[in-house]
Every structure is written in structure tokens, then in C-alpha cells.
Amino acid sequence: MNRGHTYRELIGAAGAGRAVLAHLGERFRRADAAEWRERIARGEVKLDGAPTGVDVRLRAGQCLSWDRPPWIEPPVPLGAAVLHEDALLLAVAKPRGLPTLPGAGLYLDHTLLAVVRRRAPEASPMHRLGRDTSGVVLFARTAAAAARVQAAFQGPRVRKLYRALCSGHPARDAFQVDATIGVVPHPLLGSVHAADAGGRSATSHVRVLERRGGEGGPPSALVEVEIETGRPHQIRIHLAHAGHPLVGDPLFGEGGVPLAGTRALPGDPGYLLHAHRLELDHPLDGTPLVLECAPPPALRRRAE
Image (cartoon, rainbow, N blue to C red; front, side):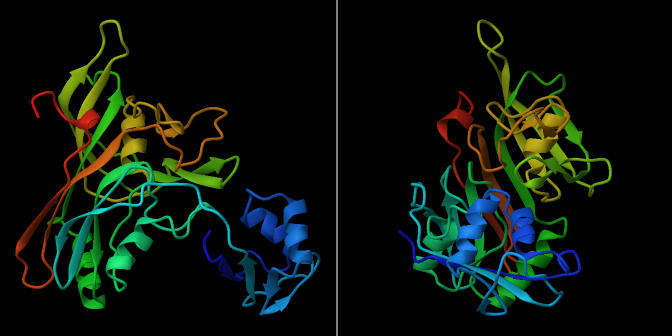
């Protein structure tokens, strides 16, 4: 059991004038109104540090908080092999099933961040992988290193290569996907990132490494994907948009949007995706740094 957590929100213009109960129901859709009434009655929900009521109207600038009692987190793999370590950087191999950061209302201590900070309390993640995505995650150990890495991530000298298993056999051995990514409605979360004409630009370069199945089994393809941008769920969305959703993906279907009628969440398992290689210049002296994490067996070529 963890130690519990206090969630805080600074009320903005969108929440001003809304009743506390209605606001919580809108912001946290996984709990119904009856659950929030009980939490408010127990004094767990506070407004500017004092217990509040269900019908109290919010004002912009107020702090709304929920003191969540300790809870038992779902079991996850809690190991992360060190791939590189020096005074400024720490790179680790995230296992499939381990969340990178706290979230989903389930995970606090059972995260890669908590695992890494037991070794390096000062470490800050430079990017994140989805819960069911494995592979390289880079942490910075100083504020200066973090600033340089973040700036580098916006430029052309950082390369991020992934392995994935997608459905079907792409017609071409190599192709590019440029579908813009924005937010679309989701029945449980309110919204989720997906292919959206009004979204932000995103580019993925896909190369087929191996075609599988097709005779007595469903066709699939092992692909390498290099992303120029880092939008949420980009590879899952882009391959689905190209007509080749990841095998086992419970959320994204053809077109790069949520499957019709789905209640799946972005973190739900099933797909195979691995951050295989990260290349960047070291923030200390610009020396090229290559970080690699061997893919799991299902994402290796037969010859590997």
C-alpha cells in the first residue's frame, strides 16, 4: 500500500462558477457523483485548504484539492536495467507494463519514475513511454542537463527509433505518415489524442523489416519507425492511420481514431511497441551518444 496522495488543481476560467461536485465529476470521470459525495462528506476534498461542500461555487484562482487515502496499486514489473549512467544522464530500459509516470488514478509508487528515483533521487524524465511500451527512457540528473536535452529534442540531431508489430502487409517497404494529431471525444476520459485534421503536425518514417503470416494466419509486419515529432501515442495513431493498426491495440483502429464503441483507455495493454534506439549529443560536450535497448523476442527479426 502506498502513502496516499494529494491532488491539487488551480481553478481557471473554465471552472469558475461551477459547483464543486459538478466540477469533480467533469474532471474525474472514473468516479461517479455518489463516490465524490462520500469523499466530500469525509472531508477529503478541500477548497483553499478547508473542507468544502458539494454545492459550493468555485472561483478562478482558488485551489481545489483531494486528499486521497493510501491504496493498493496494481502489480507491475518493478525492474529497470541501467543502459547508461554518468553525472548528467541516466538511461534505463523500461519493461512493458510499467507506467513511466504516476497517473490513471492507479499508479503512484509503481512507476518507472519511482524506481529510478530510488537510485537517483534527482533524476527527471526527458520523455515518456506508454505503459505497454518497452525500451529506452532517458533521465537528466541536473536542471542544466535537462534544459539542454529538452532543447535538443526540438531539433534534427536527436533520433528516436522504435520497433512495432502492425497488422497487415504494407504495400511499400518504406513510407512516411504525416497525419496531424489532436484530441477527439472519448466516453470515459472526455477526450483522447488521435488523428485529427485540426491537430498538430507529426511525422513518422516507417520501414518494413519483416512480413509475417498470411498463410494460415493473419498477416502482420515487423516495422521500424523513426519519429521526427513526439506527439502522444504517435506511432500507434500513425500506423493505424496508414491502415495498419498495431496488432492487439485495443484503442486505435484504421484511420488513427478510437475504434467504434470502444471503452479502452490509452494505457490498456495488448499491442507490441518498443523504443529501440535513441541518439543524441551529450549535453556536456556534444559527443554523440547512442542508447540502445534490445527488443523483446516478438519484435526481433528471425535473423537476430
